[in-house]
Image (cartoon, rainbow, N blue to C red; front, side, top):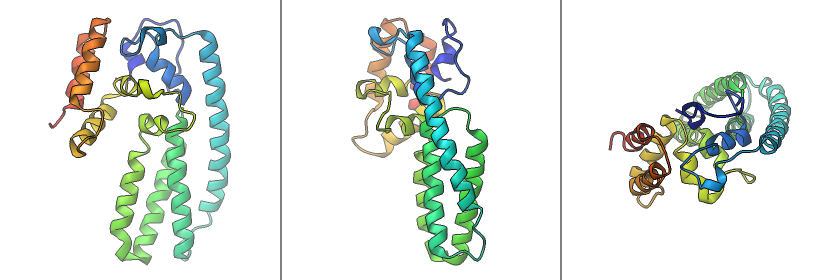
Length: 223
């Protein structure tokens, strides 16, 4: 339910799988969750965003190609140190893919399979470390959710003041996960009160009430 798919009235031909910078323009476009002055997107902004996304993509492909070469050298005789090093590189590359965005499904699939292979090899070699590996993989998986990966980029297009609006413009799975974090960690923001307040203000600005209902239900799911 990513915002731009609900928002049919627009003058742009958005990419189905946008990169980080175009994705944020899609969030902002005519979206009452954002301040009024941030809801209008220009052709110049879109052009600049796509240039940044293309630059990101090219840099990612370079790193991915080098990683493929190194990962291809691993086998069941590789040292534990080599496996650990490659696992770190693999998980960092997976995080980077989420931060870059765009059409990287094939690359992400290859990275995921290699991650599982390395973990399997390490579990055989160092079975007492299986628990730690599971926790590391779980943490890394969290960082691969596009919203979270893109919000922490040093050059993130998501302003601090727009973090909640951006989150509430995401797909329901991401919103649901944020709600789970909110209930799991005392003091975590945003919480349900924050979400209801933001949605209430946006409804007064024209936000679709059904959209708002789906969002709050996702955030509070299994509450």
